[in-house]
Image (tube, rainbow over all chains, first blue to last red; front, side, top):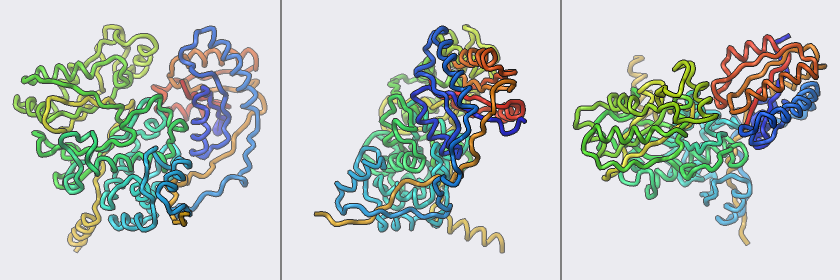
Length: 442
Length: 96
């Protein structure tokens, strides 16, 4: 041997369905699974020995059992260029919603029927072909063609001109550093937050001011929702199936805002990430929630101290693995910090220093997880070790958003995920770029 | 009574082809078994206990244990390569 070793997964009962679905999506539909009782992590040593005895017998049987899959019986896969299928449905909004809900094609809220006419109107806002595959979306690895993105955008209530934002969002979500696979199947309440920068935000009316993470703006509501439908219908992360969230969070319905660039005393996010100010971008963030920080302080030191203390909580996955957390600074707090001469990079550095967590605040199993998770970076961690929230200060991301008020928001981020930014390619932008290329070529 | 209309099915198909059928061993006796510990609480103990039973009861020749940094990250390529080259069967873990 040994190339081509046999493979087997030991799965706790709550994760068997996910394991099966995942194997199928990855193209290995008949790998054996040995099942152990859930929850497994809280068992005593004696219980574990009993579980291992039974599990070893299962492994011995399963690993010698030939597969039953007949390759000829595999479901026929559509060709990569396949267009979406139209189905016949009752010509009645209530009945269509009933049908979509029964088939688990929606998020629990009513949808706009994705008729050929509506989808066609949306497709006019990109020069890409409907069958172009923009990305494959984990964990089901459905092919997100331009057309499927448009269908789900129509369902979410998006206006046709929103399509380029969602194409960029799908591209960003599928980048390896975003680690969508983990976000989609985790027990954590992981939502995908869209942050819009550049001229497109104003043009589409994406709210960056008061209540920008709340209700009231059509673009915020429907863009975030469209991405959720894409994650469900193309990625196949259905709640209580492959999406294993223990509780989830409201941000999984929709989670989208723009940066308040007019009130931002520093360079906006997309410029910080290397894009020209007149370009538009979408950034995807694997957000675990929003945590209000009500700070009336007038001094930068006090503002930073309260934010850093909020970031440093022992149940945070950031300290276990080294994270990439986000802050939404209110314009007021950003101005307090800027007024005292702090750059965005300096704010990050100070927060990184001041939010170090005393390792002994993390007890039990989680202390062990932290030792494993940070050993390569920090060496051996003892109870007195001061553990930084991220490997480097620049892994903390900051935007300025919101209206007036003394509130900033801490956004913890799911373990191992790194936000990703992609440019929104508008059809007229693409025309202009082609013109420039042609001009240079001459 | 409502008439009918046409709407798109929003579920996009997966284009991954089934890659290989499952490989089975003729027996466990004399074989090398690899474990990828997913770093979830207690999985290291399960790996130790399984290894003991597989050797004592089923005659497994040896066991190679490796640990991932965390459950949600894929095992490093070097770890996968090492186990694929040295083992007859590799066992992974999923769940809590």
